[in-house]
Length: 195
Image (cartoon, rainbow, N blue to C red; front, side, top):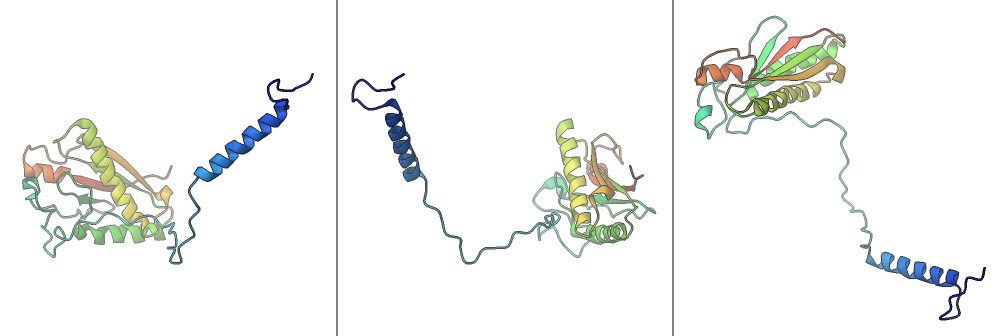
C-alpha cells in the first residue's frame, strides 16, 4: 500500500516524523533551564528528628512549670512516677511536647533500652476527657510517638518500643477538673513482652 499524502505529495511517514520533531522542539523549549548546584550544599542527614521540646517559656528550673498562654495550662504537671519498671510522662493541655523536667527520665530509659536489646517497652498515650473521642485518640498517639522518638535518640531500636493510644479511655483520675485532667494527660511507659 502506498502511504502518500494526496495534498502535498509527501509520504505519511515523512509528515509524522516532521510533526514529532516539531513537538519535541516545543517541549524542549518549554522546560525550565537546569540549575547548577550551589557551592554550599548542605549534607543530608538520615538521623531521626529530635524529640519535640517545650518552648523556652515552658522550660524552667521550677518542676511545676507548664506551657503558658492558656487558662487550662495553669496547673502544675505531676511528677514522673518512679514505680519500678514503669514511668509516666505528663503533658500540658492539648500538647504533645515533652517538658524538660521529663528528659532525664527519657534519657535513663533510653540508655537502659539501648544497652539491653532484649528489653521491650510499650508507650501508652492518654488524654483527658475534653475533646472528641477521635481527637483524644490522635492526641494520645502523638504523645506516645513523641516519647518513642525521644527514646530513639539514645539508640533504642524500632523493635524495642511500641506506641499505642488509649485517648480518654483509661483515665488515672476520674474527676472533672484540672487536678484530675492533669493526671490523665500522660504517656505511660510499661515493660512489654517481645513479640
